Length: 158
Image (cartoon, rainbow, N blue to C red):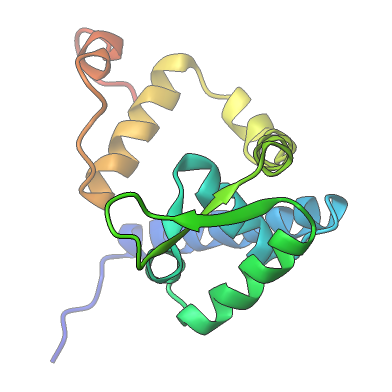
């Protein structure tokens, strides 16, 4: 028999689910304002970080590589993405944003207002704490020494 989660854990999981659903809803809306599908916007945003082969894009977005090929084809036909050989392995093609694609990805990212307003209600200390807790939940190491410097002295406010 599987142990049941405590009520607090269940409430936190429900709240995380609500945040994720609202984020996806706004992301789809923001993508549409840029004449993109949500999937195209996610691929473009991912490529804005670094050029990637199709297989890696599919892994990161947890979908089939054949789906990514179609998405990249459509982004490429709009002049937002281009393919070029990987310098480390000429058999592999990397997808990378064009200048216009990088600008579109940045405009898309900055147009996501969903989190700005609620996060704006938190102090810098609270946002730092939230970031660190989310990183800890995901097993991501805090960013450099700045995380230590930003942490308040004394008891952590919750």
